[in-house]
Length: 259
Image (cartoon, rainbow, N blue to C red; front, side, top):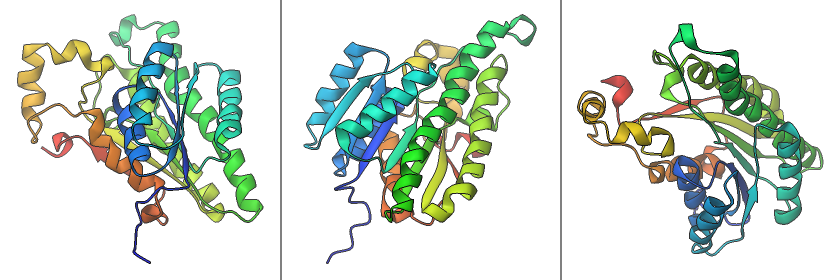
């Protein structure tokens, strides 16, 4: 039999925030590699558009309208994803929000909005997916992959974005602890750290000439990243090719961090 480590036929993935940007890029990669995919998103219209794109890859795809800032909604959505697709082999906690202000002007409300979505919701998502994966392992079916979208803000200075940076650094610690705890079940946990990526979150910056000159001009690849640039890493971490790779943080930023 040919060696096909990246073949995801028979595997099921959940991608939060999977209706656009990095999340949709990941979901498309997974679907193209043969996985069945459930995407979660708050916007029903964006969900529907993303679903049509994913259907072109031929597998089973589902879209759930989910607000991950609500713990009960996360619990229900994981249960519904399992009901529709039968199992979950990979769970990607990608949903996130931005939002910042000068440190002396940031309000607790602004802080909590970011930390709830970018940190609390990742915990809820990982917890609910892990419950299924652990139960499956204890029944003799070991394995699973948890992946979170962090950010290079976790390792850079992020002025006026302390809440965002804190959450993106916090999930790295969550990944390391989870990786060690769940390894005996064959469950892996890893993080991806994107750099400057052209998404809705960065829309304002994309049209700012000074930013493109000073920041994007420093990216060795000389361009903004795109959602599709994350298809390959999603497939890798969902596949058996990464079955001994856990507790890691992978930077995908066109070389920005090292230049």
